[in-house]
Image 1 (tube, rainbow, N blue to C red):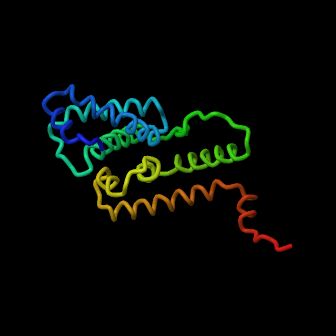
Image 2: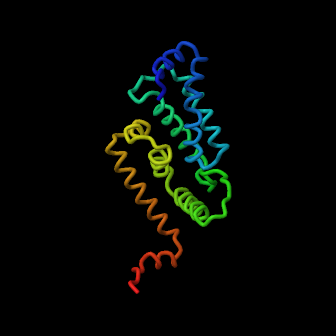
Length: 191
């Protein structure tokens, strides 16, 4: 949250040009969130644009909250993204992590494989499960802000997150090759 965010909101209510400072502060975060959620950069750009367009139109109705305007913007973005995903009724597996510089070390290869494995498992989750995981762990928002964005209690966030992580864990386990599963179940030898 910006130090002078409440003042900027008040200014934006009177003069739409003052909304620019809020836009500049949040646009990259909202875009990154929608890109992870949508798995499509073009769709994320559309959702981000609509989010800020709606926020500007509705800024006069916005009721100031303790966490600032950020959760409100995330909620608008989430609603737009979910609406767009419902209209699509399918997910296209595109990378959420962007193009990365290729390194020829074993660690880099393993790291990339891990990201791809997580990406594929997340893509198979329901949008609601993916959304709560993205908000909490990839956007690194605190649980009380996630609760505000999802319009639920903090306790409900913990329950939903626990269930979503269980589903993600099941997806990750189903993606492991049989040989890896067998390897993980073998106790180390003391020879």
